[in-house]
Length: 125
Image (cartoon, rainbow, N blue to C red; front, side, top):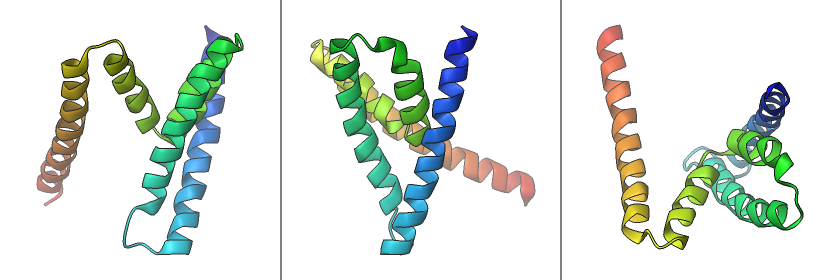
């Protein structure tokens, strides 16, 4: 268990650093008017999650999943895990559950962010 935790932590540090560098690079190239860095890491991370889930399963490399999938990709973008969870639900035929998960995640997460902003602003007002 401790080795798995070390893998996740190491991968998370790598992924978070890559996300930061991607955001800085995108801002320098395209400017601050649109979150290009975020959309880039979400798309790339989701693609990489799709590649890894198949590759690791076919090559017997699931022991690297904590490092690569949870750690690196989780630190790079949690959207990749969200995409995989959504796809898994859809692929097993739970289409309404998948749709509910996608819509619920987006709407509730965005609503929670708004609530957090406004509640915290009230505390510091």
